[in-house]
Image (cartoon, rainbow, N blue to C red; front, side, top):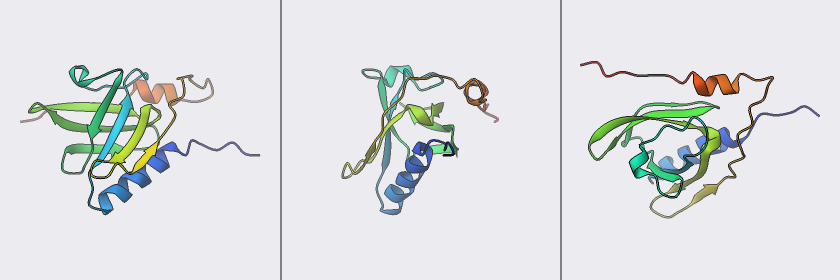
Length: 129
């Protein structure tokens, strides 16, 4: 039997689209202890952060099978966030709580994969005025 890639990024993207298409606000709960997570630490509670990822709340959005990357405002200050898909614990609609929870497996880099390298080589942005 052929090994398959994780279905988690596909499920998260599908649920995100479903929540937005239904006029609701998508939120993510992220395990900030997962390697590579970059979020504003002052908003972390109990090792988790809840993020509003609605199209009106974020900018410079990139979502692939390895990570989500976007800019968002926290207390009026724009910050860039980097979230490995595997660190996503929950995606849900703020208005009704519908969504899905996921297990966050311990991080164990695959020696035959460049996945660990993709976490290390995340995109970087700088403000140009």
